[in-house]
Structure formats: C-alpha cells, structure tokens
Image (cartoon, rainbow, N blue to C red; front, side, top):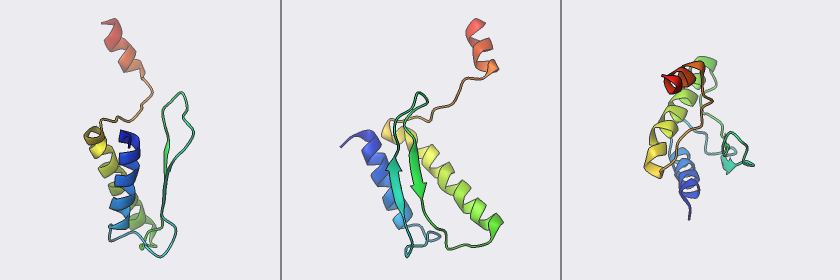
Amino acid sequence: MTNIGTFRAYIGAYLRNHPQVNQNLTLLVRQLEPTPHGLPIQIYIFSKEKRWVPYEDIQSDLFDHFLAVLPEFDLQAFQEPSGKDFIKLVN
C-alpha cells in the first residue's frame, strides 16, 4: 500500500465514523487523474445537516482535519506559488 492509498483509506474510515456524515447515502473517496498540479482526491458524502451554514462548518472542519494530517502520511497539499514566493526566492 502507498502513502496516498493509506491516506484515502484513512479518509474513508474517518468519514464512516464521523457523527455528521449520513451513513445511509453515498460515501466515496477516490483519486482522480494526476495533473500538473498534483493528484486530486475527490470526497463525495452527504451530511446529516441540511442547513447551509452548519453544513459549511462541517465541510470546513473535515477539510481542516484532512489537511492537518497530510504530513502524517508524508504528503503535502499543492499550492500555486504567489508573487510573495517569487520575491522570497529573489531575495
């Protein structure tokens, strides 16, 4: 098993045990085709929460968690360089 495969398995297990994820509807974690920007991971779930603002909070909390644990899998998120990145390189 690879680190990305282990990370996908972790995401799936985390979501299957999350109290706000509707376990009676589709739960899908898959990787998409690699791009020059990285390897996209698609997460497809349904929340038990139907109200917009609390739903957005749940979604944000999930992604905060997944981004925070990336280093545990020796992975990192891709981010396009900004002007500040180039200024740091020049200086």
